[in-house]
Length: 314
Ligand SMILES: [Zn+2]
Image (cartoon, rainbow, N blue to C red; front, side, top):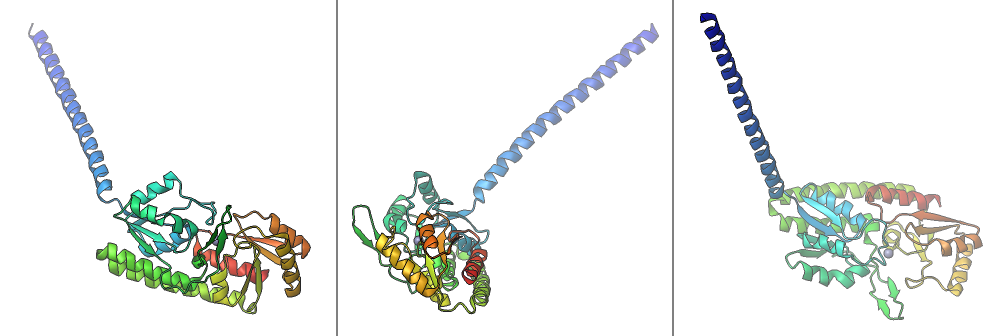
């Protein structure tokens, strides 16, 4: 009898212990779930709080410069998607969404789509600061367009300022100034990244000059004339195949062939996103070759050196 009651006592104790532990573990489990949930919520809250400011540039190569100056302080996005043509691009609704979240818009200054759309960008986000990064550059005239109706769109300004280290330095200073005005607490940061960019641009310039030494005065036959600023910087002559921003006429093509033969030109430069057919016609006529380059590459410094290399070797 006594034995049995001890056994009962023991069983009771065991059940008590098991229940207590089960209870404890359940409570710990609930606490764990609650705590993880809390952590998740607070993390999300934190990402909302520390979300970076956004800025938008017009074209991909500007992204390199804006990111160089802004560092990790801003998210930089380009209006124009990769692979589209900067001469014919029109902003799509999904591109306009970039405007709605931007603190700052860095216009290149003379692109056709900027001339047509910049007012609409401003209207869709009146709080956004808009600056022309080419302010202070001695702009080259002669970028001429005619639309299908034959209307003359001579904006008079060549937009290809990004393909020149000296122009990029002016743009860098404008960007640094604009960022400092918006984010005054980090003004010294934007001054230091500007100094670093000057050093980068100067070393790119030095390498280009080394590669092009001996090429001074060289004529470059090019389909779309994007190298006016580059040619000005490095004493080259740009000859455009496009006629007033359009496909060349047969008469103009034969004139070009004559010029190329006279000057001993054997290469025709063409940007990646353009149709090569006309360039190939001329190449056959002058027994030369078509050289494709990418004016829109994102790694600007690397691309400028590549361009100098192509010009020196062709
Ligand atoms: Zn262009």
